Length: 412
Image (tube, one colour):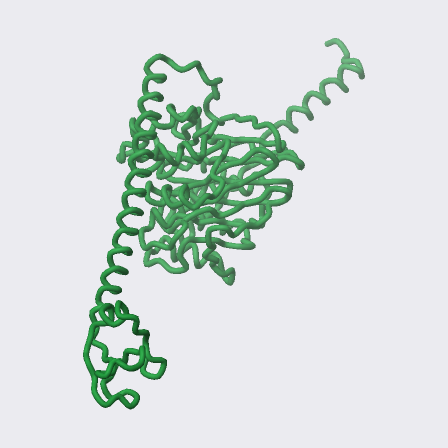
């Protein structure tokens, strides 16, 4: 047998040790993210087959992840060490929220916004709050009679629930988050959704929860700056949201629809997709692209997806151009009708006020007053017993004033 040379032995052992170093460490399969929240425990690596690459976030850029949580909403926003979680998807997304935060190393969420207490928006927050503590927790309500919301409140511990008003804001690093809806309180869960605008430099995002057309109208009428480069489409693309007038105010470049594949609700609807196309927005869907990630340097946006490729916007087809023209014409017609109705109401209100004033004046003129029977003096009186009139003659106010009488300063 040939004798092995020392150089060959060194090379052999180097390769051996390198192979041992490449072996994957044993995964801990005991991650109990479902404890207390009605979700079966699973291993961390099984939480999602297509987790986004959350490592290596830039320290000086805004990162917005629209997480693929199935039929629900969840968005994670980070800027350096600052973090904001908006909604958490359904309860079954708890493992994913836990895994994403663990992968990012986020053990403290500076802000959490639960747009409203529906299960498909707040359910997964329990998993997030099992891994990370919470600084400020915003929600549209402080109480809700569901087990799902109760689990979230339990995970909050002593952190209070803040119900913000339109106009309230907070900072996320150099970025600003401002609440723009709901404009007025409502008992309707969807239209009561917290709506907030995230602005960093010249780039902006609008998160709408499940806000529907009536809330959109109030926000548009409020005069708030609703323009955003990225719109999180309301109510998963339901036809009850994304009204033409609202989209004209937002003018989004991108429209992100957080929706489950083959969901039973038929979301997103064709009508909504047509309105978004007519608004000129590039539609990105979590059921097609997985988690959708935007990065902003304050001037430019870049976008990637975890399970698909974000294609450049193709030129509008003739059908899309016709649809856009039809929707714009419809929006103009509706706006004209609304303006005409408002003007007609204004004229009617002014006419009614004038008629009421005339009626009041006429009633005033026909009241009975009294003057001296002798004709002496030039005062009329509300009572025949006023002053030292020895005899009185009754007249109406209009008759007395026509004869040159003026009100008595004593009885008027």
